[in-house]
Image (tube, one colour):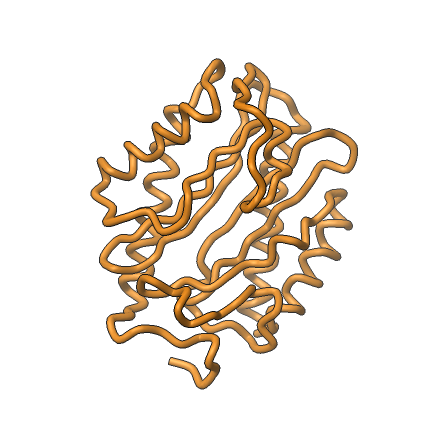
Length: 219
């Protein structure tokens, strides 16, 4: 697929299987998001997400399922949530799923809101919009990883949000991708090939204690 060692794949790799795994992950996120309601505990929704994945016959979870409420939407993947918050009537949350179908790693994430707080709704939409702009730049300009995240940072600031540069995307592949040591997309000094990299966008509100997250496969 590529001469770049950080884009190595296993013998069973298939871009069609990657796209299938991604489609199934998005299906799971949609189903879980529709079942999350105000009054639920963050821990309860994580357990509910695992059941959704099981019902969709995923083979295994390859990274821990995350659901973050409120101020916990500012946390990075490796940081623990503060407490076990209850989702409010006007609140914000995101889902981050990584599961295996057909031996390939799906990984997707999106932010949702309850109620009608306009600032929260704008934050959730901004993460997705910024993702779409960066993805379009990758497609049209064939930018390397560091350039994509510089572009993302500049456009986040222009949109009035703060980009979390501790989150810079990563490899996926036929399971397990980790044996290839691909590192972060934001550190990959070449234009990423399709079907191998997750572009992650995490933003923070400039003054209020919450943020938003969106990620998908560059495919």
